[in-house]
Amino acid sequence: MAGTLKSATGKSKINLSTKKFGIVVAEWNEEITEALYEGAYTALIKLGAKKSNLHRITVPGSYELPLAAQRLAKQKEIAAVICLGCIIQGETPHFDYICNAVANGIMRVNLDSGKPVAFGVLTTLDKKQALERAGGKHGNKGEEAAVTVVEMLK
Ligand code: RBF
Figure (cartoon, rainbow, N blue to C red):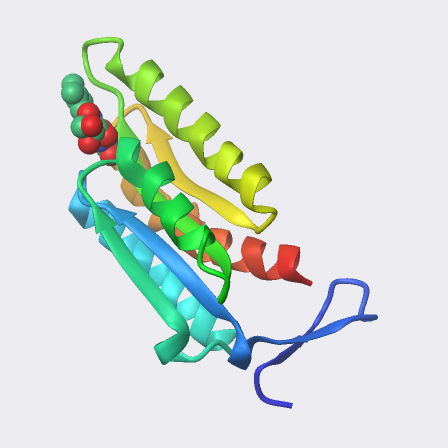
């Protein structure tokens, strides 16, 4: 049946055509995060979600992802949220502060809401590593984040 997936064990099915998803995209390193969004969006559609059930929020940077994810997760009709960002290491320790804050913030939304909230945030040493994970030789981590929330819903 269209929009219905079998789980890894083949025992349970889920109809994604009725599920609503939130997708939060950070604007920092936009070229990368838009590629992650493309990966997540395409994966959800392929898995059976409806375009009209995908709700995107754009935020300035990855640090803002948890608040927007919380806003979406609080909505009763949203089943799961995907957070997409790209943090590239610079010359100052901001990288560690931002990565830790974002990872902890997203986990908090996950546990507080009881809904799947995916960490689709690249934390890389340079842009090359990020491109390799946004549709390059290491796949597309946005796509993987979308598959992950669907697995968790199952
Ligand atoms: N946001 C990102 O999503 N990726 C980055 O690589 C990134 N680098 C930043 C570097 C510095 C020095 C600062 C101050 C912010 C950076 N941000 C980055 C933005 C951050 O996520 C947030 O939007 C701002 O700190 C405002 O809260």
